[in-house]
Image 1 (spheres, rainbow, N blue to C red):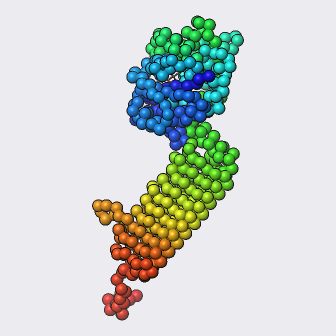
Image 2 (tube, protein in one colour):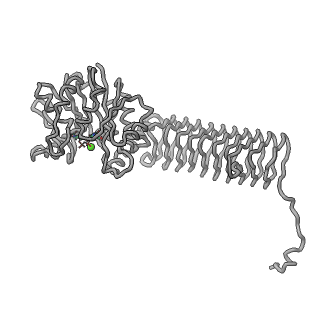
Image 3 (cartoon, rainbow, N blue to C red):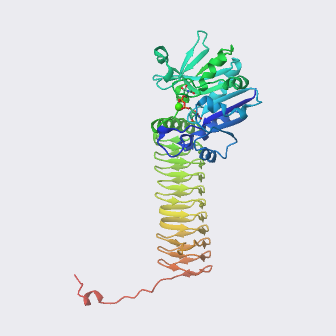
Length: 456
Ligand code: UD1
Ligand code: CA
């Protein structure tokens, strides 16, 4: 049967106290609305429509990579009204539509697939996703008939005393027969405590036409919504533990999963060992047998096999296999480090390539440079890439030995198989096979200390 989905994301989320729309707040590094879109997509629905309203442009921009349609809800007059705004998306379609909200990111694609099965096998006109909770405060209550069907949903503010005691709640996720939803959605009114068009009132309309309505109960962990920063942190915790469990199941060692922060789209191969305090973000890929000692942040980078990293920051870069990085290295975007290389303590590399087996062991800055293989950088080398106006390029061939405390004033080229004496300031090309010395010659003034009366 044809399946599609609507994601409601037009609300504002006052309790977040934020200048960005609620659905763009991130859980494990990804905007909640994008998490929901991805999960819905994985469950193999054919089309997805996102209802946007508050700060619609921002939500559109944040979801531009996704294959989704948009409906626009100018004024937020309630969840029923939001679905009315998606009528053009539903028109002419036959089959099932599932409805989710952009602020409940913990639903899984397996559960969505089961929801469609439950709904279609039971021949329901509507299926409500429900959860049993300890404290139902604020949620719509599920009122079931004797045969287990749902007969209505009563919003917290509209509940009588009996209804307030019900602890099965409406998760705000549903599945509908598209034609039944289309024929009842326009009949909603806003005669209720909040003066809103409630999507939940569709149930009673369907019931009055003998339609079957099912209740599909799932653990609260999957239906939990985010309305505040506290709930955001609770969702983060649940998601983090799911992500970490998945990596451990795939053969990754996490020394302390409670203190390891891995984004939703990060890939890690087996036999990699991750110590606490690591933050892995974006589309980072960590290949097998790497060791991430404590406290690194790695964003959107590819770390090849058997790399060791400690207490470093690596952004939008690639690290070749068998290389070691850190402690306290800073590898900035568009950097490529070769194989079996070494980037040591307090080394910053920006927008540069560094060849295989090259060692940059301590206290060095490399920016806008192309460095060959087999080079050795002495302590305290500085690539002087900025002349105050523009960034210039430095090119260093293979097997060059750069003495300690060298300045390479760009643009400059150092050919292969060269030596640069310690303390040199290089401003001209160093030809292949040469030694370059660019510093004042040493002069000793004999007896100077005594002559000045400084002898102790
Ligand atoms: C809704 C349900 C309630 C359920 C709860 C679960 C109704 C009437 N009530 O209540 O039974 O227990 O969710 O969290 O549906 N939205 C729009 N446009 C609007 C209004 C809302 O897009 O005009 C979106 C919001 O961005 C949000 C979602 O719909 O993501 C839910 O809206 P919200 O106002 O939070 O509904 P609740 O009052 O929580
Ligand atoms: Ca809500």
